[in-house]
Image 1 (cartoon, rainbow, N blue to C red):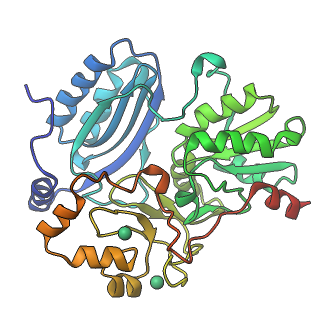
Image 2 (image 1 turned 120 degrees about the vertical axis):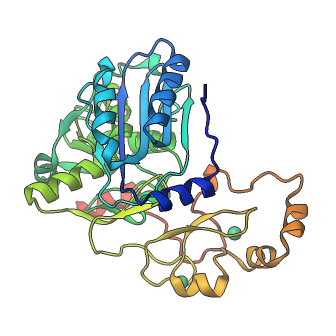
Length: 356
Ligand SMILES: [Zn+2]
Ligand SMILES: [Zn+2]
């Protein structure tokens, strides 16, 4: 029985091109008690592999978090399969705003300790006591309220290219880090302000809202289905869109354009630009924003050093890398001292002071 990928990304890309099929990119998550994630994982792999599903899926005792693509003509069968699983019956599927047949090139289903790396000990608070879920309409009304503090629960490289008007965008590298910073900076507002939060697809807010309630925030709200579902409702119902720029996504599309506003800059020359790239030097791979002119001049690299290394014959590059781990761990994502125009995002206190 095949339980793992057999095709390389290149082989898969060629197959997708050849088939000419239209693929749908979507995501969903569900917190639910799964007794044996390993067996569940294998069951999903066998079923979904047969439907030509590709994507990155995490399964844990606490539930499932899935980002994937599938041939559009398999959508019905896929949905029917989900409905055979009790806790996934009728689950909300976040369909991508911008489609790309090659958003994913492998099917990876992994068993993890948790479905979001939140660093929280779930035994210490009631994870089921969540914030109030609001739809796009209610969210728009809430964020116009003077008594609301709107917080972006994502990391700096995500909010840098797009966020809601007037949102606080903590300058953080990880979700865990953001929780403490937000709690500390907003502690005087626990009783009287509305704490309204959002993230990409809603999953981070599921835990964060419960955590903030546990920490004493009285009025906690979360955007149901995140930016993806908000955008869908805005389009479908003709509601005013209050999201500026691009929605960062964790697949090969990297982002979906939600509004025409360009709120970020090229990290190398400073001109308005909001498309991320990875440094072409295999030993770096830094995620950063680079405009087309800089891309050409720098050969898609983040620094002169990387450009020099990247220009070396492949064998020499490999020899240089030998014995060195990849320098770009998650904490360096989108950050490097040599990028002059990398924005420091707004400090929470400054934003609140400016409001008063
Ligand atoms: Zn530039
Ligand atoms: Zn680099």
